[in-house]
Length: 141
Length: 141
Length: 141
Length: 141
Image 1 (cartoon, chains in turn purple, blue, brown, green):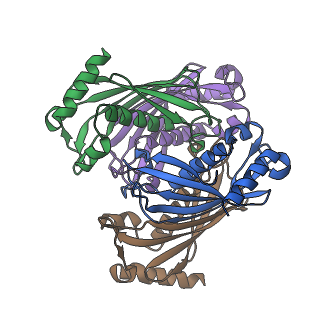
Image 2 (cartoon, each protein chain N blue to C red):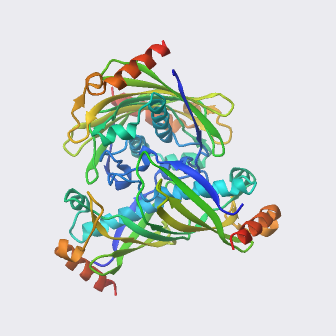
Image 3 (cartoon, rainbow over the protein chains, first blue to last red):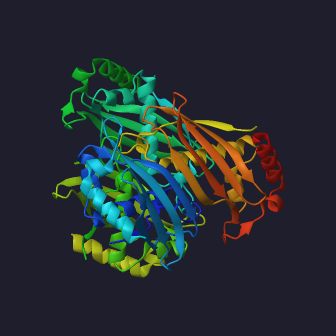
């Protein structure tokens, strides 16, 4: 598959006094989209962490276009924007119930060892992930 | 000391669409009060965790009395309600800027080993904490 | 229906450095359970707020029994514990994937006007909700 | 003043199972830095909202450099990166206790009416803010 899709019901706790979803909470949703993409590719991020590897966020770029409100269901699309065997950039688009774009963004990640935060080469450490990511990236072109 | 005091500026992120602090966030504030009390007693919760012991919450009881809003500074008072060498119950009172009671509550905790969640006896494992907690409790009577 | 059921995937953001779900986040989940129960009864909490009525939490009582971890799916059961036409007490039980009890708890609520926080009588203001709540409560006995 | 400074104690609730501050929480801290800058300029964001104007985030760009842990105190520096009378871009640098850079980032904001999200011209609606922002920007050059 190319672009992963996940629906997210807005939680009351996610709103702020503007009456809309608080901007930082979209980063949590982007993580849900990323997790879904990894799942759709046949892997489990939770399992990777149990194997002693974590994948911290290196940078985040987000543009907020439309607000979302409690009672609405958002849809997040997630794909692999770039991947070079070491660093992954995920792309995200969040849609309102009316299919308007609420947010577009990217996040960059590397994989590191949990105990010392030393980077690892995905291509070497997780060859199966590497192949799946290469394929998912190509499908996106 | 008897009752520990900490001031907390309401964060925008802590509000919800009711325009007031979201109720679950008070549990975070209770933790700030608890951390301050432990600090006032001369200890460090962060250090305890580095020593491999954690202190999970066993139960929480909270009554919400008044709302708090963004732009306000709350004051949290924290004390040791009961302590028996094994289980600690902390008491909390959160005040509005006008010194009205916003919340009263308690939380119960035990100490367990971080790697296997097995309970430990505070009195035996941390005799200095034990004495300090006994004294702080007595001062509250 | 009697007891409402909702599945909740643990989010990475909901964990803390203990490696388990942070205790305050269960209050957010209890709200998801409550929202599901209201939906199962044929109503919408979001709609009620749009009509100018909010339902703040008056008190919370929670006992934590087992931890939940990232990668797990929790199940929350929610029911009406007591209801007198004015005040509702919801009951909650959260289960681990192995159907062990992770949490039991209650939350009490009244309904108030959004603009002045004055309480309203559910029985009078929302007679249809009143009947549904009475019925749901009876089914629980 | 040119660059505003605020110290932030890491909260336990802000950590995740990696054992460090969860990445989305830095956006909350950036807001604390922004609020401090506005305060240092002699204004109050809370007051602005009470006057019916809100200032939503338009975009966020963040690079994560170093982790922060529970028990540490971070320092956030905030300044006005660009300002044109309509749109403000704030710059942020978060430092670890050892004064290493943990994060650099920017956030863009406009001001809109709370009731209809229509944009307003800061220069016209808030001439005093306008002058203060112009001055703060110049000092940054």
